[in-house]
Image (tube, rainbow, N blue to C red; front, side, top):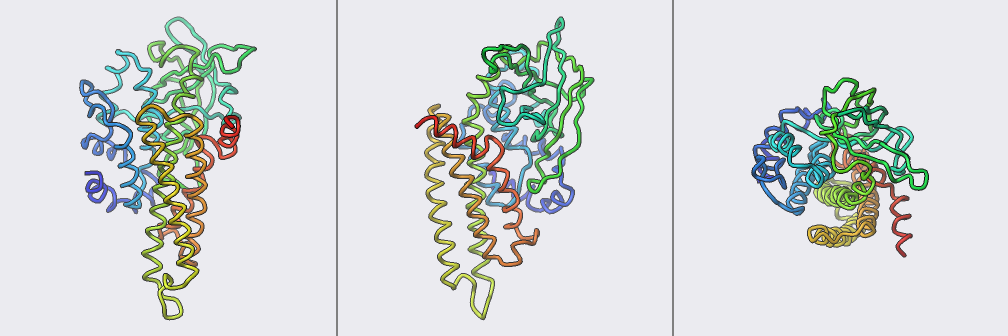
Length: 365
């Protein structure tokens, strides 16, 4: 179903999306009609019911196979929605879930600040309780889906504990249109042009206490619990992109003639493709193991870090070697390997840099 939908609704218009660097908002409403946006949302709210993570993997695999991108969709489904499903109360579910399932409400999460990346305990955005509201002030950057989203989960500091910086962080759901909430410019990136990455600012935004997600002051533990799933999602993006890079390179080297022979017939080409294919099998095995553990609720933060580290570093090597086999054409953006190359770089940065992941892994040894 996913493959047919992409071939019908995305592949024909994808070049225009790239030119405009924009996915039309109505596309997500049409995608919702397939039931994809309602995955893991209860049927009573218009969702598809419990689906499991492997359905999300299918969506990722088929998107990569079709050589297209769906912008901030992965962040919405695999990074943000787990927070809503885990911590939204009954009233919030009734208020937000039907719109999310129908595609009328898109979500984002705002953690990173101009001076705070992986150090979440250093967040400076503040929220002060004032009657039935929180007064929110601060700024966020590198927010995936920040322009598209109607609901933004903002991580803010509601109290300070001198003995433990991790205490006192809270999740507040800010709605588009709230006075003082401003969506800044769409950041111009090297790759991922369809994933709108934004700067957000909050100036005396009055957020109703009814938009508190979970308990006040407990956000750091919430963020830690979801990081394994977030990193698994990035691993999926890496392993599927690496496979797509290998597939397009095999097809190209079979057709491209050099010195009267296909590029694929040269020993160097064979050896390079063999090396990429072997690494890819290793990464796929590691990823599949992590998916099975995640489905059982057993994926540890350390194993998620290992999976993301290996798969994203693998992707970087794979796209570089594959692009080389395209020669000069690999540097031309109309060839998919060029887009795969540009898009790959950030995967070693967001969701925890490779250096942060190595620190996590080393602490467990």
